[in-house]
Length: 361
Image (tube, helix red, strand yellow):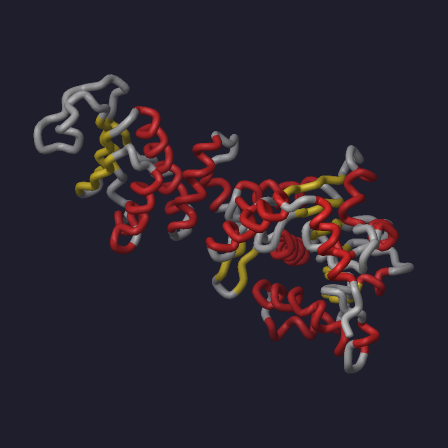
């Protein structure tokens, strides 16, 4: 690994005139030498965008780049973090992955939280590749979720929109199929969402079901050659179906994903989980804050943890706004709605829900 060479001392030493920190001659000053085989553009970003990101994240530190040297001035603790950050970014580059602002910010967050996992290990973990695109976790929470899928037979991925809980589960399913660890993939969703009932929607049964399953098809197209999907579905290697179609079956040697599980009843959740057969893996995903069931119906995802907590080979992975990997505003929006919802008086919330459940004329 092409680690940077660091030339520094923790002692406060005078800094020569004209060098960074000369206005404060006893501020720690470190030099990090980047290996000559590393392109500085790959490390600093176009127009020094990634360097600017580092400077924004470490306002008490001055970072000056000369040739292949980082000259860092500031508090010793911050300098140590910047040095570790540079080492992690070099490891990501060495793994052949391009850097971007998001990767730098997430690496800094992990270093500050002093996680046992290295940022480079999180950002370079490959799940599946297709048409030159590699799908990998982008946050520590996502990596732990993916690791849990490897280590457990049943995993619940619970978190807000944009945290990758379904997308990463599908990538793991495709990887398992390609490695011949399973013989088929089964993707399912409950077919009642947003207060709509299938019987009142126009068209054939397939027409009615398709909108609920479309997001699963969309994700599949990112991971499997689109031309092969119809053939795999005809052969039964990939099945996309409403949850009701799972009843009465035993699913062996399969990777099974239940999406939007917050819209199952406790009875439906039990029905689904007991479809598990030999050689199979199950991943259940959902967001307990987005329940679209008719008023008074209990969500199966909300109660299943109380029922199964502590069982061997069952894992509950919690993803948060920190794991949102859509547009950077999505994480802020999710947090803002969470604060607003928490601040509302309980009776206010109940009154709003009762009003929402009234039939509209």
